Amino acid sequence: LDISTLREVVSTCMLADNDVNAIEIVSEMLILDNDINRSEKLAMFCMTTLWILARKSDANKHKIIFEGRTLEAIVEAMTFHRETSLDIQTRACGLLWSLAMNANHRKHIAQLGGCDGILNAMLSHKEVDCLQAMALGALKVISLDAVGQSTLILKGTGSIVADSMDRHPNNATIQSEGCAILCNLARNVDQSVRLVSEREIEAVINAILSNPNSSGVIEGACFALLCFASSNDNIGSIRNNPQIQRALELSFRNHPEAVGEYVQIILGRLRKITA
Image (tube, rainbow, N blue to C red; front, side, top):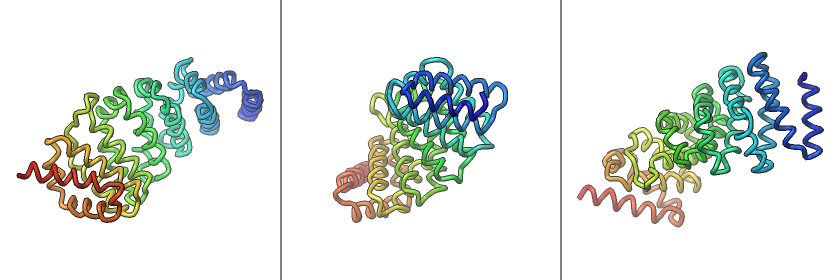
């Protein structure tokens, strides 16, 4: 099918609420195109259509992930168009985010290359805030799953997220999503907290300093610091950051109701270890 005919066929299916056929047709075309032409225009149409259908129902999400090779084809298309199409990368990250909204799907997305696709998109388009925000949104939900978390940790996601936060200091969405991901990756399945890097800690502290009036960023950052500080292994790195005191004071002063308790607990832990 050419792209115009494909649009007509898929539109007819969707207007008739025949989502099953629409998904099958689009998936088949994406798989075929990956093998032969690798058309940016067709890949973008397929990604957008699957994104619309995924957002429509959990049944559609399930079909996209578990039936046929649709999920693999999505990741393959991201690989083929990694450097050449920002639009495909952004839409694909949004599609994977939508699919991952169902907790039962997250480990399968991680196992079938979804994490690689998202992280590679971030690395290829570091300066594009809309792509970074979409990718971080997807990573946030995937990082809530044990398999997703372990996959992301093995791929050095903390460093990639910290780099994104450093490059986009005034984008509140990137900062808040980044803090959430770093917090999720720090907490193990048994609720213990792993050792986090100084760079991750610095990224969270800088999020506060760059967005002092954003309650969403401040709350997310302070919660992440609270998480990090629950492990004695992280206390030294937090305390040794030259901006930690200023960041906590700024958070408490600007958002006392939202983070006052967090700040007091963090300060208490830092003082206790010092003593």
